Image 1 (cartoon, rainbow, N blue to C red):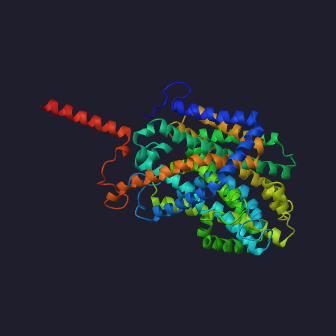
Image 2 (image 1 turned 120 degrees about the vertical axis):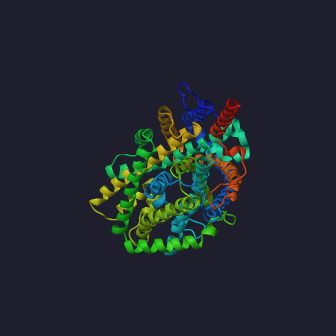
Image 3 (image 1 turned 90 degrees about the horizontal axis):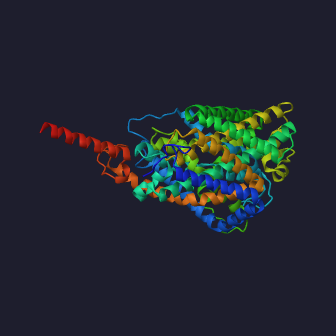
Length: 546
């Protein structure tokens, strides 16, 4: 049985799992602090060793998840509800979309929306190297849409849907292990289940650390360009500490208050930033390039989805696609669980269409405006962004703003973007902290405050150590490596969901379970206990009447 401690520091948590998880992160901290160069070298070597395998394995896995999610949202199970048949969604559509987007890709897209189109502009396997022309700009935009679009959100939506289905419809605790209960039965309560959840925690921790590391580097670059504060390791550590302090205070207040309000706040800030770029940037070009690049993305989606670098000798696939699919997979335990937590009451169709299409559309608009402005400056103005990006990737966004020649508005806009980066960092950090403690408590949504604080501190320390160990390259190597074990869990979740959905075939109408045969794993422990109590009560009544 899955037991929580009833007293002491670990009250409300699984003591064994919490101890192992804490020791695992502490060991990483010690290794990264005392053996910095060796840790960086080891992560790089592991990444290089895994790359030939991951170049096709991650591609196949993500491709399958995309088609699988489309089938779930449009096929025979599209009306199955994440909860009882008469439930309504817990959050409004606006609040729902705000939270899932902010926790999902807010930080990453701010970092890469300018840097990636510029870097792809001259170097990708679909154009001749160094051909900086209008056609290359469209391809650069298409590749940026691809790595931030519907394929990545298929990973998030799958994990989120599976967790929400088992929790709200099958009445299982909200944690990863119970998505495999159709396969493992009651073994999910033992060491096997503990291992599954620990793999999820492992991927989550390094996924969040990578996200925080990128955002902190970008804030550091922004503070240097706007306020002339010299970029330094000390500044990065101060930023990490400040972000995690605010994030911890937010997550202590709960999802309905702190997390929701912060998510909505940075969503409105994002809308303001998008409108600013559209109105004060090269509007005609931005609209044209976004529309054309979107069409190019749709036309080439299948080709890109199955691209494995088989006929190219460059490291583009490993640098970009393998990294991004690994990053999405590492994020998926905490983003998927967070999405599940806020998606109760929605049907498969609502969930799939919302999580796949709405964030993808927002992403396309964002990259189209920010990345399109950077490409316009390179094609038709003085340029300079390419040199800046290759000198310091994290400065790309602020160099692009300076290139817009806004005069006195330049520092104001850059400052607002720094604030936006900070709010996205806080949202991602508090969502991740909430999910880690949820997993380690066995699915409890109201987790102990001391453990939320503890994991906020551990995440801040791990982010700092990874940055000190080598910056961006070390972050990328860590997340790719951490994602691989959890990808095996994802395969088990696919099988578990398919087995569980067999019961839905017996519905009188889509979404209703009326005549389904009993599955031993599908009945929660408390339901069984209640049934036993009712039987004993009936027997006692019969005896009294006799």
